[in-house]
Length: 247
Image (cartoon, rainbow, N blue to C red; front, side):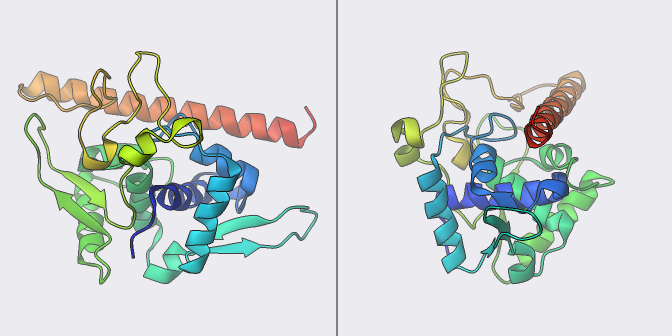
């Protein structure tokens, strides 16, 4: 089973929002579309309309990875929830790692620990490594180690459930392609294979060479990015709450 990039993005969003904003979960189609198009904690950043999100939902439903929650208890629209944990027997830490890999592409162990902080608490990078090894050993082989490439300081892990965002998505235009960032380059171009986007400054690029102080700077940059993502997510939740209260 290999999901399309859109289905992988939708599945990752459902897992992420279940763990970070359980009070708003399951998600409506509108909320899920907003999550898929989020500018933070996503690589690449894409623009999907509701039709493409619905197509991804249908794909996931056929594979029994997503279920529809009919309106009830004062709710007036259908909502959607994932069953990744039930289908593959995954606990919260492993679901969080899968969500991050689906949403951001290949990452180092340190990056995964920092970027899953809002979902679960990993005491150390060793704990992250153990959970990744378990995903690798899973009967479905959900995650794999990607050997470092020239210019990379560390190995990266990637998920194998969904296809990476490739050339088709990059040239898909306004309804699916990566949006240009403020520097003029495409955000996340090439994220699916772990390469950095030409002309863009990666959020947590690994220096090709360097000593201890450079590694410390990388850790600070990754932590700062995680904090920035958390602030952006909190703002989004506050806006959603205000809309719900009629503000």
